Amino acid sequence: MMPWDKLKEECGVFAIADHPEAARLTYLGLYALQHRGQESAGIVSSDRRKLHIEKGMGLVADVFNEARLERLPGGYAIGHVRYSTAGESAFSNAQPILVDCWRGQLALAHNGNLINAAHLRHELERDGAIFHSTSDSEVILHLLSRSRRRTIQEAFVDALRIVQGAFSLVILTPQCLLVARDPRGFRPLCIGRVDGRYTIASETCAFDLINAEYVRDVQPGEVIRIEGDSLETQSPFPKERPAYCIFEHIYFSRPDSLVFGRTVNTSRQLLGKLLAREHPADADLVVPVPDSGLPAALGYSRESGIPFEMGLIRNHYVGRTFIEPRQSIRNFGVKVKLNPMREVLKGKRVVLVDDSIVRGTTSKKIVHIVRAAGAAEIHVRITSPPIIGPCYYGIDTPTKRELIAASKSVEEIRKFIGADSLGYLSIDAMLSAVEDKECYCSACFTDCYPTDVVHDDRQKELFGKNLAELLSSGPH
Ligand code: SF4
Image 1 (spheres, rainbow, N blue to C red):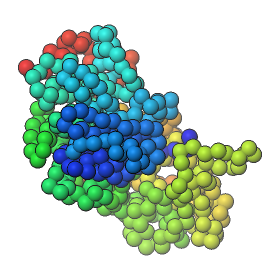
Image 2: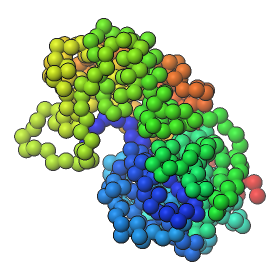
Image 3: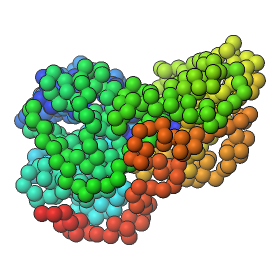
């Protein structure tokens, strides 16, 4: 496994309704969303009679070929790319999840994380449910199947009333496409139009590739049913204060995407500009840690007047695993991915711009290779505040104990990574880099979570209800 110390986005979703090239456009959409998950990829299509599935472990380009796409007939399709935490990268967790139940076939692709999944799963298992994966997304399908409501859309809403946390998801039946976003809207989800047909994606960069036009975001708490050219929408959940994940702007999303109604590149350049104001440095060069640090380093450079240089070159073709040499090479993992430009760095005072520090181990290695390439001084500048708490809403974070900023001061972190100075952007400045700052979640920087957050073994205590109570809790 690549020893790269970053928070990891867990998934990307895509869907399209009533288009003759549904599977192929989904394949392309997933290609554009590859940065949101690299461990598995899958597509389910519908020919209006039944669902067809192809999925596998690996990158979109590895999983799909001409023959597999040929086995996905029909005008409707949903797709998913997944990143999973260590030990859970089993094929059984790859999505979309396709099930047969008394309502017929259903397939689901989910981005996000349910905070009451462990409790719900326990209750469902006690009632006889058999799970095929460890993914919390499967809970939604079990709940949907248990609902006695007449239509699939009503049953979908019933199931979503019971789950809590983050979900941007799409469900395909042989006849229609269902779409939903949780009431706080943690993860992005957008609606587009291509050739007069509706398409859905986690980020707009997927629309650009297939020549689709961005229409609008799926609103927090919105549930949509798409069949043919008709789109029916409803907002069945109580209104909540939005909690868009600010990390989508800092790091996860592609800079060319429009996320939560704002271009990511604009936010990142502004983060860099604000960082230059809060933490100026007496230096010769501004160097980004590629790729995510790039727009912010440009912003820093423009604001400070210090020239921008590509002092680190990234190898884009590194897979997730590689064979190490028998004799250990110092900082091998980082060197595989980043190579320092000696002639750029030698003798220079460098501002090194990165988006975050998680455990601190990768930052330490990067500082070391930049210094070994001859830099005279290294001033690390981070476009987010210190991360002090884990994420419960669909981002893979280490435990609080492993987060370096949860237990060390900025000065202690500076010493640990070996930089001459270290500056983090303040929470206020970070929030001012996005519009509608009161609509954002920044819990991993503040420890103030927008929902109740409980560990698995305390979920029953908090969520309390047994399955019968849960299933009858919605308005009927
Ligand atoms: S806790 Fe952090 S990573 Fe998780 S949704 Fe909130 S801002 Fe995003």
